[in-house]
Image (cartoon, rainbow, N blue to C red; front, side):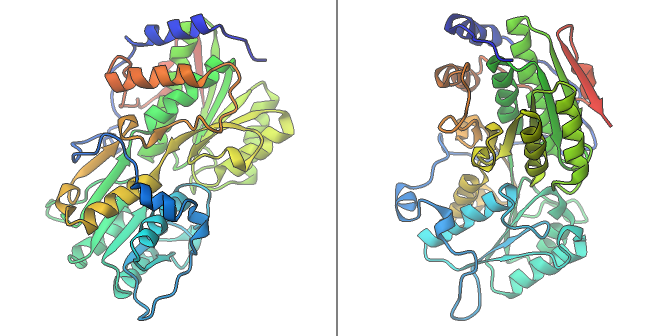
Length: 403
């Protein structure tokens, strides 16, 4: 199934890709992928002493105690799952790491109705956090927007981090200075997921994402995946087929329907599926295990979750949260409040986890060369995704959208 690729060929590919990049019409109903960002450090890394004290966030308790029953940092989940091994857990890990290193109290709040949460439920959770003494509230997930906006307008002395979000405005269009929007260049991680898969030798690919195709971060993952696979197919001169779907991912959770769809894909020849969205990995990995297939995870390194996962498209929310909390506690909120900050490969928060990937033909050295090409601007990964993903089909790449 896989092909042994020569080092010469792969290195030539890097130079070939240096001129790649297209311009497409953005999906107008979605927030833009990238806006003016606040100044960022060259590399997004935490202070050494932080890792020395708490190298593993799992060593820090989730339910802490407080002498006065007030909590300095609050985290609001968009649904009822905290340890989803994805975006909730990664954000929570960052909060715990920062709080533990700085002797700050923390608490998480979940909407009362869990996966069926409404905007009212999310607002109630935010209100409870503010009443519980939070100076800063961290929210993650696009579903938080309406509740977060209402709360930010009411609780103007409380600061809010909107992870995977953007700046918000009041009913009159005025930017809310107490909301900091932090987003990511997921298309860069998605690009290398697709590129490495084809360079590894896979030619029958799949993508399934969460949010019904309305979540910008998942859309960017998928668009990047198609770009990377297409560039690798063009460089190698091999035909590639991609199944692409938003079905069965509206609530970002695994389901029997999602597993059945993945089973059909694998049974019909799909070799590897890239999935992004909460616990959707569980269903896709189960289908892969039944069919000797493979999976690419998303957000955090998901290779420990299943033997079928060969790599993951990373988005290190934990590091981003630590950095943003540092801004707040160092008195530099003006650097991020009311501003859209978009983090990318140069900030060290997106990419592939080379320590754990299971690639056999695509090497870490070749990946590092490609990363350098992106950082230098020689390799351009487009940020704007099209309305119709099948419009990216070429003579070598066939994209079939499953609706």
